[in-house]
Length: 305
Ligand code: PLP
Image: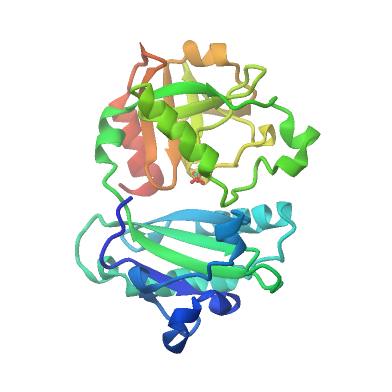
């Protein structure tokens, strides 16, 4: 994502110490939006040196926060998994709202502006024992092509079994940590294979999630998503889509899906807060049917886009 001119950052109170020394004389008061290009965290912050923290990405469409409470809950859940102090979710919400209000897109009358709000929460500067929190408000990229025409996806082995969250909780599967280097590497592997995205599969053949998305698989009138106890994130976008599908009279279920079931799907979607709902048009080089009409019904029904 290219950082936009108007993008802003808001530091939370506990995050004040993270403003870099060089800028200390002009350090912004906590809660006060600053241009993203001028904001800095301390080079000794464990977010930078260890990826030791958690985050959330929230869509804001025409000024509406999508699934804000679910994202705040998931931030707290991820923080608990990392034994971080409980985040002040009210302060995060206030910072997010202040940041959005300060973003030029919020003041323009452009009808379908999509912003992405990132909540970041790190263990803080090494040795300081104070977490760092800040919020970024970014102009969302244009996802219309992926939403309308679909994406090419490859399956990749995640390298652990489907029950890893139970057998090895220290691997933090199911927490949205700041360590996304593996997720980014998987996306580069997809690009090398001439694809746009990835569906991770466990070493024992169970469908998990994308590096930045949840998976929905359709067989007939039944729509299923991998269960969140498989060491994956409980997707807020997928949950909203399931509510819309249920409203349309379809059956939905959280399930254990095998890789073979992906191959027989009538349709597959990847869901995430940024891109929202993207139909899969190709899986490991094989065509997958795309239901453009249902996809646009879901986008409209669940998110008003
Ligand atoms: N799984 C992973 C690993 C993700 O990074 C994301 C997106 O943040 C999701 C699933 C989808 O979650 P959500 O729909 O709440 O954005």
